Picture 1 (spheres, rainbow over the protein chains, first blue to last red):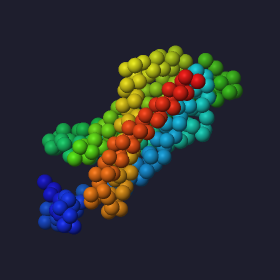
Picture 2 (cartoon, each protein chain N blue to C red):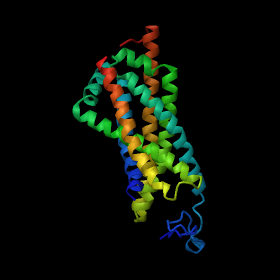
Picture 3 (cartoon, helix red, strand yellow):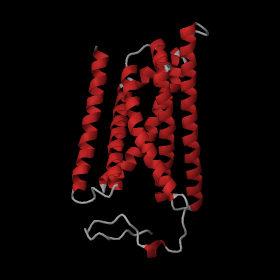
Length: 148
Length: 109
């Protein structure tokens, strides 16, 4: 078990881990990548979630045709698509850490981490498909082709 | 302690919320009937309670993320960390209330 030490003498549990507790364990070789990606997507999410909130408020009380035209417009569809990709990556990394922290059985942990990865990719794929379909529906309404 | 686990809890709640958002988009993509159906579910009382909870969870997780950015710079781990916690909690409740007040006003107009 990793045991943080009080290196700065504040009495608060330090953020650093003593060298002796990690020596011999080897490196996971992807810690920094995970750390940077989690923060990068987190920053992107903070911006994109504002877009999501504005879209949600604008969609209030909108009938179908107006909702399709609104979500299908490039100014909404593109940030929305970006939001789902960024959120999916952030979610995959975050839930993976939760799984790795609490599931100690090797097999269960590997299966859950894999399932988590598949879920993140699947949810992003479904969201992107839905956005493309809404864009096509908006295009159809605008040009009079394939109007439902 | 409580705030640390809340960041994880809200993170997991956000996964459920993401499924709801994607579900709503899929309904809009599926056509007018599915859209009307989704609107009925999402604007029901239970739907509203779930959506308000999701909004709070999302805002709380975002503000918690900002706290992490502060910690990443090496600051905010002293006594000030308690103030950051309160800011996180109170801020999330205020923003959630403001957002839903806005939606209620838009609906009423």
